[in-house]
Image (cartoon, rainbow, N blue to C red):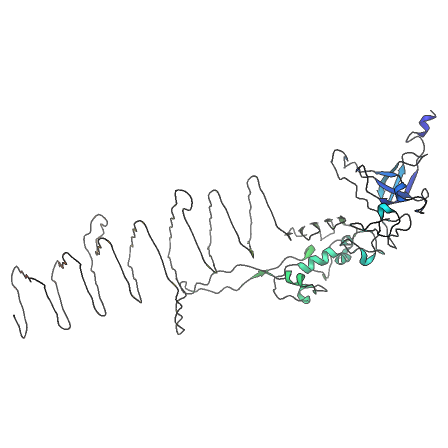
Length: 502
């Protein structure tokens, strides 16, 4: 029975309050060294940090703390005030930490005394005589190495959880400075910030333009010129900095977790300002606003890989703006259905290649309406001559079959050349085409000046189903290099004031 008096739970309960001075557990199980009030001296010469016992950190029942599961290691830092008990009430060498104690630090860390973060380039304790990545804690004004802005003399509660005081948190200041605004003209009045002296931040503060419809005034009746639109990134938290009612992050309803480097997670239960927020120290963040709107901002590159299918339903408008190149590779079929109008506005070249793969491919179009197009800028009435553009160059290696159910009008304001290697057939044909070539209409060929018909060899024939009329406004010259043979079934009638036969 005497031996059991020293067994944990049988030897009394001895609790302590202390300060964490070291967290670099050589066994990497989340232990920390704690200097305990009333049990350890603050004299570092008598009791250096390295001689303090390692304390285990108790985790909640929602954290298994084994086999890499749960939240490990514990998030206690040098300078944290903690409370716990000794498993060995007599020896007091096995401390267990059951929680941390926030407060209101009134002075920065003093590496020369115990109950402080010992890390400093001037520390006499050699293992801690270095500049830490973050800290020393508590932070000392402009010397802090975290980006929150938290200083000595204010509560340990995160600024983001203190209502309007959250506007002094550096992460929120930076978000407002870098917010993309619809108005390309940037100024403090429209942005609502205190300082825009950073040229990099000012550059990032331009609006995001949206696409405009093409202006088809030369081919479209009633064409309207559409002005450029802009959209802006929603205000952080869904409210402006100087909002009359600041419904966001009100204490004690905003639950904030912030890491040393500046990673942030917020669960805001403020009435009327309910939000979810996650941010990386680089500035990449995701925020769900009180109205359910979601803002995602990635300051670096974005990669999204979906091993299965992806289905997206958007019951509103979509604006996509990119300042770089867009590439799409679709290894299957691509189906695009537009129930309204489909417009394209291309500022430079447009190139299309059909059948780029093995076996080639076809292009098929069906237009149940009209087709209008303008090639080249053309000449504006009363304006300068048009530029040398509007050319069409085509090569067709097969046949062309075109059926025009009604009339065709073609106007060429300059010359026209047609070269055919084999035969040319021009016929005003009947409705039985293409079975027959029975003529049913007229063909008129008119020239303002000369009209020539020439063959290199063979016969030139003129045949009329009724009369053949030949008329010249001036001299008519008919010449044969050999014989002229004129045959008439009935008679030949030649009328002239003078007939010369040589």
